[in-house]
Amino acid sequence: MASYNTSEFKSGLKFMMDGDPYNIIENEFVKPGKGQAFSRVKIRNLKSGRVLDKTFKSGEKVEAADVMEVNAEYLYTDGEYWHFMEPTSFEQYQASSTAVADVLNWLKDQETYIVTLWNGEPLSISPPNFVVLKITECDPGIQGNTAQGATKPAIVETGAAIKVPLFVEEGELVKIDTRTGEYLSRAKEA
Amino acid sequence: MHWEPSGDQHSRIERANMLRKIREFFYEKGVLEVETPALSSAANTDPFIESLKVATTQTGQEEQRYLHTSPEYAMKRLLAAGSGDIYQICKVWRAEPSSRQHNAEFTMLEYYRLGFKLSTLMTEVNTLLLSLIPNITKESHYTSYASLFLDNLGFDPHTVNEQLINSAVNDLVPGFIGDLDRQSALDLLLSHCIEPLFPKDRLTFVYDYPGSQSALAKTEFSIDHPDVLIAKRFEVYAGNLELGNGYEELTSAAKNETVLKNELDTRRKMNLPLEAIDQRFLAATKAGLPECSGIAIGIDRVLMLQNGVSEIKQVMNFSWENA
Image (cartoon, rainbow over all chains, first blue to last red; front, top):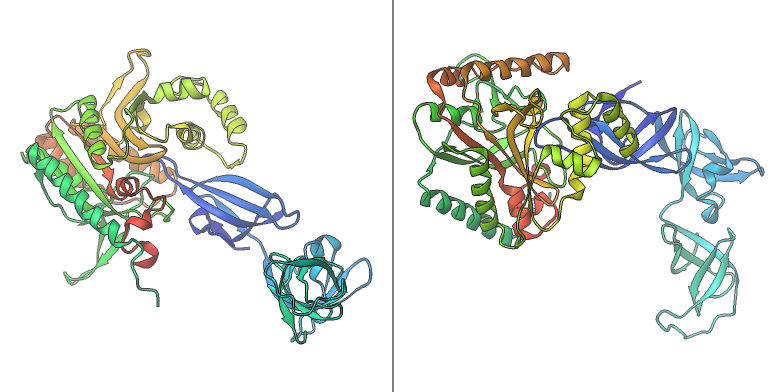
């Protein structure tokens, strides 16, 4: 397995520590005027999601983590696993409830997600930045009311609760920013 | 294609002003501005400083040259040749990753004052820096390396046993991974636990380092502990940003040679490249270096403070990534 020297540290680099894969969020090179330099890093455990602060002596090596990302369509859940398929190779991946925990609000059939694989197994699933979802529950719309900022609660087909403008109707499709969970616009089709 | 400079026009004007002020400061004191080569046939042997290498071919055969990491060796050859007080403002290079406060290519002010003791140089550097950074108005803070550890961590770094250092590392920097020798453990504690506590609004001078960190500074036995060797060296910080590194210079030819050879030995142990020792520098020390003190100051960092910015690239036209 390949290894990285601390001089190669940068955000996004994935490496192994104590048997778990980690992703570097921030790297700071600390160099005193004379003497030993250090790399101070903020890292995320890709299994638990926990963020840690670590310091490495400059020149230390870490083992690269066999972590890769693939785009895959969501197929279905059998209650225990969530199944995804890479659309060109038809390779299927089954993700555990931990892996899908952060994406459940935006999980929709045939939508494409980023599946992070560690040693070939799904570690986490990230949604696309924008998804189009159907409103399944909300108060009737007030036509013509486009007042800035006035919103009402709504539930979308995945079960997520969002806030939408007053004119939005049940059954309509809306575009949502998954990073903030905010309504962006009405949409014509998925 | 991104082509625009990182720093703005204001930073360019401030840089030009600062260079002029530095030159006026030394002109008034009769310190001579000099130039020395940036590409040298010898490298810095300090095990914690890597030189950038350039393969030259213009003589018909390949020759390894090194971009200087500071003009120290060459300026000391001038001192040995009778130059008197000298200063230089030049670009230097270090094979190190860039960070918010460090660029692999940066501008250094290096100067030497004949007959100056370390304390005299500290006073002069304080005057110079405060004149360049008028927004620092508080009186500077002076502390010895030993008091920093005694006051903040409760032990004397010169006499503390390995066990106590290791337990301090485990307690205070729990995120540290790897093995450390004694001095590197002190470096870790200093950079992670002590430097962040330096007062933000003033200069801090730290002096009298452990003998093992002397580089080319004079060493002497401590008054408190007659068996402990102290390096006559100081570092000056603004907040916890290190600005410069001053020495009461080692003049003995034999001791200079020993330091360089020990640095190569350390490099061998650390599996680092064994670069060529600067023999011309050693020859100059045999001819005789005058008693003097000298300092290297990172000018870009002084500009950061003067401009009130937090990233070095904001005071550079084209930082490493944009060069």
